[in-house]
Image 1: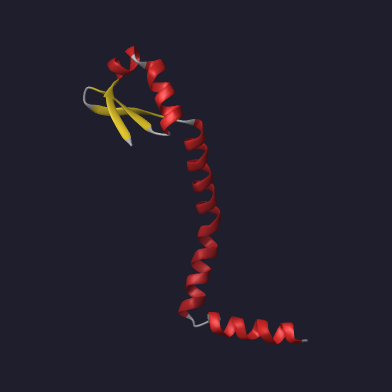
Image 2 (image 1 turned 60 degrees about the vertical axis):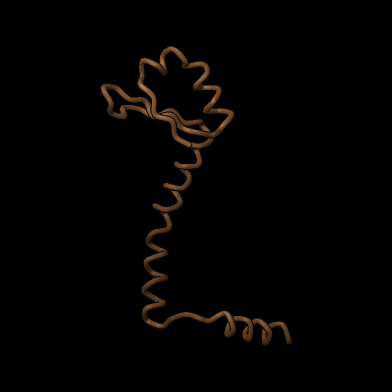
Length: 91
């Protein structure tokens, strides 16, 4: 859940906001003159976002290559995979 509050209000309630963000795993958008100027989030949430970004940045090329292989028909169906696995385990 995201809360949007003016920065002047946040200044008064900063300790309460920090506790809420930590306990409820939420975010608070701070506004100045009606526009969001900053966001408060828990460190765990920020770590999760950064990890997701890193993973996506380093997976995009592989995903695109896999999509191209599928488009070229270079793939194995689940049934084909199961059959190959059976044959492999028979030996």
